[in-house]
Structures are given as structure tokens and as C-alpha cells.
Image (tube, rainbow, N blue to C red; front, side):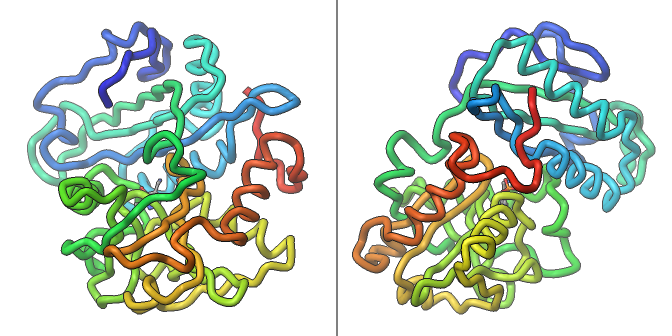
Length: 305
Ligand code: PMP
């Protein structure tokens, strides 16, 4: 992230200057990847700025902490309040929020009971995979790196250490000149992007891999499944072999950072017509419509700042 840092950050209970939110080099998390985190976006809406599915993201943070027995010194309402405060303190209007909880300084053993440090950062963020990608789409490749096998590193936790896998996938893709990498599970079946879930379109229906395919149960993925079903668009969760990436009519990635990014080719082969297709555009319209007010917020997903 080569960027200007915002002036303030929330750290262990209070808003402080960005530069003061430091930790020791011997913090457990730095050595062992023992952190859990979230990525959340806020959007301007006709009713004021809203944090999208803030509570659901914070619940997932606590689920990740539960898997790793990480005691959380703040509860969901306190971190929701922290999220609002850090947006306000930095006067942001289209923010990416990054709550993180990690094992701090207090022991070197793998099972050390260290204190948990918690921070919530926020900064302005546009499209994650580059300017214009939401319209034009990206070229993706299947990574030579597979995702971790079941019952090794739990894919259902959004933990810092998981992103070693994501870094291998994303860095290889960039090195080869692709916009993003797609990983297969240890089964050889389709898993997900480096930091995004995937949807394939066949005959007007959405197909996506199940959570058993070593993927993070994305909140954007769940949003798309819900919006699609509400609009009578078929959704099928099923095992997907790699070659169906080349055979589908349309393909897109989704995630809080990536939002809904069309994929126009995989491994140099065009997806469908080689440009974003009509169902991808429809899903984008429904998703971004939540923030313009065109899609009704039936589920209370827009949480006011
Ligand atoms: N998979 C991975 C590995 C991710 O890092 C993310 C981003 N959090 C996603 C999927 C998408 O999840 P969400 O829609 O909840 O942001």
C-alpha cells in the first residue's frame, strides 16, 4: 500500500495518531501469523454514509478468534463503535475499514497466552484491482499454488497466516502479468481467488464452489447469493473442476475490496465473449444499487456511520 496514511487510528480502546499505534517486534503475531482481521467498506448513500454489513463482518472476526482461542478484549458493539469513530476522525466518505486483533507481546511459545491487541484502521479506497476494472474486467490465471487442505489451516477463519497462501497466488499472477490469480483446492477443484470468491455463469445461473473447497465464506458472496435468489436468478453451489473456468459464459470475482470484478480471460483463454457479460452487469447493478438506493436494503445491511 504505497499511500498517504490517514491521521488517526483506533488502537486498544482509543483513537490515536496513526504513528503512535505501534507494537513490539517480538509480538507473537509477527512471528507466527497469529492475527485475525476483517476488511469492510463504507459507501455514501442517499441516507448518509453506511458501513456495509458491519455487524456480519465483526461476527466473522469473532468466529475467526474463536477458532484460534484468541480472547477478545472488546465486544462486537465496541468494535462497531470504534469503526464509526475512526471513519469520523479521519473524515472519510468511502472507506475501507481494517479491524485486526492479534497476539501481542507476552510469550514466545506457540501456545503462549499473550494479551490480544486490537486496532481498527480506515482509509479511502477505490477499486482494489485497479482503475476501470469494474467495467473492463481483468485477465486472470490459475495459480501453480493450491490452497491449504481441509483440517490443516482453517480456510473459514480470516487469519493473518492464511494470507501467505494469498500472497503466493497474487504475487505469481502479477509476476506473470495477470490481474489476479485463482487457486485450486488440494482436491484439484476450484477454490477461490487470492482474496476473492468466484462465480461462474452457465445458462443464466450462477455457480459457485462450496465452503468445503478451502475458501473464505465471503460476505459479498453471501450478498450476491441473496440478491440473486431475491431476483429469481438461479444459484448453484457445487464442486467445480478447473476446466469449467474456460467453458463458462461469464465469470467474476467478488469480495469487499474487489467488489464485483468481471474476469474476461483465464490462462489466456477468453471467458464467453471476452468481455463482461449481462448477468455480471445485472449483479453489479443489484449490488451497487444497495448504495444508490435502487436496490432495497431488505436485510438492514447498511449500517449508518
Ligand atoms: N476469500 C478471501 C481469501 C478473502 O480474503 C476475501 C476478502 N475478505 C474474500 C474471499 C471475500 O470475502 P468478503 O466478501 O467477506 O470480503
